[in-house]
Length: 222
Ligand code: DX5
Ligand code: ZN
Image (cartoon, rainbow, N blue to C red; front, side, top):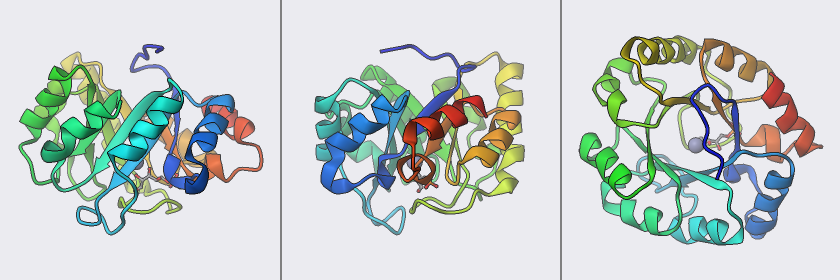
């Protein structure tokens, strides 16, 4: 596994936009097209208005290759289900600050299990909600759409939060990645990386591209 610094550009195609009947082949397609991480969107139909997949699919992806698995839990009780995703082979687990749990103990439990810990915030959630946890995380995910569905439009108002995330990281001497998720394509990748994001999650713009390798290469250069 290649260690990534918080200054490295990381392209993470979201499996949510893949053909679910061919999960392993789709993962291979993303890897051969140049993906750095696979982003796996877990939705419980409660925290968000959609149901995607659970630990069994994460495990199937894990067993089919050795790409870094970036697991995004859009579930109400990440603390309760955490161990199952760790056992399934997650490398990084991101939980939402808005979920129904003690975020500090969940983040510490993720790291104690040897995984990297991510914290996500929705577009409507202010940066003040995550400030006290920044020393406990490896990645901050600034959602650039209201989570639940792929193919939505990037919300420009999140750019100022990305700038704040980068500013606070420098001021506090921290090293977390800044990830963006939702509506990322060439034009929005330019804006998000300029604001300070380094991990780009992209579903539709990678899996639905006529040439996935070209789409990933373009995001890397954006
Ligand atoms: C949104 C998910 C995203 C989604 C991104 O709820 O967390 O990861 O798959 O999809 P696109 O890139 O299509 O906006
Ligand atoms: Zn996601």
